[in-house]
Amino acid sequence: MLEQICIKDQELNNIYHQQSELIQFGHQKFLINKDSHEEYILIVSCQFKQKVYLKSNFENSEAYWVLSKAQRKLMSMQLAKFEYFVLNDDFDELMREEFYQGQEVLEGKTINDLCLNFPKEVQHGIMKDPTNIGNIRGSLAEELCEQNNELLENLLVLNLCEENLLIQCDFNYCTSLRIAMELNSNQSVKILLEEIFKQNDIKYQELLMIDLAKFL
View 1 (cartoon, rainbow, N blue to C red):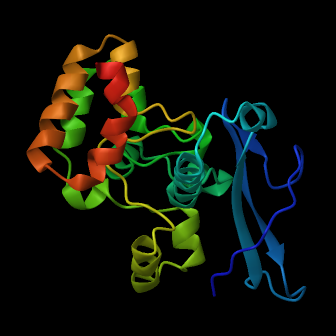
View 2 (cartoon, rainbow, N blue to C red):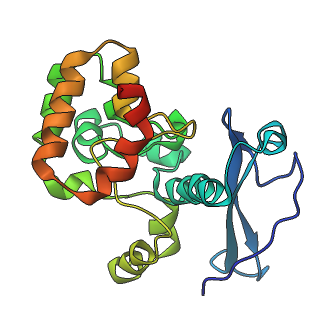
C-alpha cells in the first residue's frame, strides 16, 4: 500500500542522512510489527536546504520537479549494502550489469560517470546488452517489491522510480554530459550524444534540457 506521509520540516533528523549542495535526502524504515522485520513503513523523503529555500529561486513547478526527481533516484539507485560488496567480488559483472545504475556509495553517480575520461570504456558501455542498461537491481524499489517484476512495473508506471538511462544526473543535478564537458572529455560527449540521438527517446529530453544552457 502506498501512502503519502507529511514529514515535519527540520534541518536534522534520522531521515535526511545525506545531502548535496541543494537538498537533504534519505530514507528510513519503521517497523510496524516488533515480531517481524518484514512488516515496515518505508519513508523516502527530500527537502531543499534552508539556505536554498530562503532564496526562493524556484517556482512551485520547478521545486516539484527537483524534489520528485531526487525521490525517484533514491528509489532506483543501488543500495550500499555491506554484504553485497563483500559477497560480489566480480568486477566484470559489476561493469556489465550496473554500469548505468546510480550507486548510493557514489552519492548517486554511476560507474559510467567515473569512466568519462576513458572514451573506450564509455564506448564499451554502449555496446552492452540493452536489457542490463535499464535494470534497477538492488534498489529500494526492488526491495520494496520483493523482486516482483509486476509490482516493480507498477512503480515505474506511477513514476515513483525510474529506469536507468545512458546519462544520469546526480543529487547536484549534474548530468553525465555536463561532467564529461567539464572534464574536457569531448570524445565521451560525442559518443554519448550520438547514441542518444540514435535512440531518439523522449526519456532523455529533461536531462538534455538541464544542460542546454551550459551547451549554449
